[in-house]
Length: 258
Image (cartoon, rainbow, N blue to C red):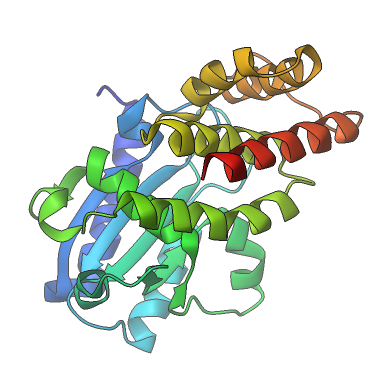
């Protein structure tokens, strides 16, 4: 898939950071998400997933964090500027165990920037969302380093996908305020996956969900979809009630589909 030169440069810079920081422990690096599933939208992150052989040392964590803070664009991304990066690192042994939720060795994302700049360090943690990331990446990821994704990334069963969505749903709904567009489109995508078993892009999920909604809810989701596609600049300050109504409805649809 064709990417703008500055996006390709940013991806290669991130890959180089991972290689320099992790050395021989780095087994594979994969590009996934919007960059491979439907094309980067104006506010799409660059999503990278890496698999390592061993635990990260404190020096490796600090070095990765320092370099990613410098390379990643702040949210919201500036048109033509650096993209926001999302980087997740998993140990091969953790993936092989088949635990759900999956344990991540290291996670970087712009939603964590304030905590990182305040001195917090990215530490290993379990989160239901990571199982969904693994499941989607196994289907769609492009290897930047190492073998094909399905050599290192485990298959996530339909039951574990449903379990992960049940676990991730409460935090997603709680995070609606201030992140309306992303939460609403993620709910649409979860609803689609829960109903069909297939992972699609956020805009494709919205296209699928809109005919299944009331007129008012459809209008709200279409507003989020158009903003995601860069057709409009969204402002949710006067649409809080509509966003909450839609989120509650789609959250119920996800739960009923699980």
